[in-house]
Length: 143
Image 1 (cartoon, rainbow, N blue to C red):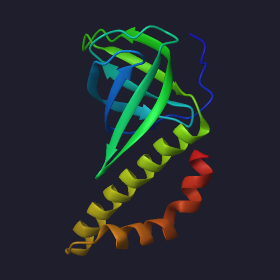
Image 2 (image 1 turned 180 degrees about the horizontal axis):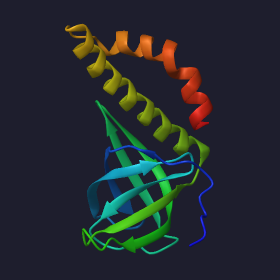
Image 3 (image 1 turned 135 degrees about the vertical axis):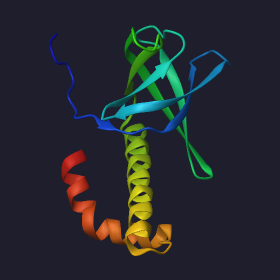
């Protein structure tokens, strides 16, 4: 099989809902991984190639709305579910997902620092520390 990916994929398990364009039925699932160009998630039903979908990704009290196009869809033998790969339609949509990824990384960092220090570290404290330590590396690795 020839590798067609243009971007490195990064594991990210994040809840999402998706809706096929022109359909009112929404499906809840979660991401498997993301890249600069798109994301992969599992679905109960196959979604045909070229189908445009609306993705809603919650983060704290906000929900990010992302438009994407299905670039591959195949049945996973183990789970019986479909692995759906989508490509973001705009740079703005890709940026939203990268922002979500960064916030999840900061939250993981906050939990780790709280355990290391034996006291609760606020999200703001963790954010400031994480940005100082890792933002330059994050930018090089992911953009």
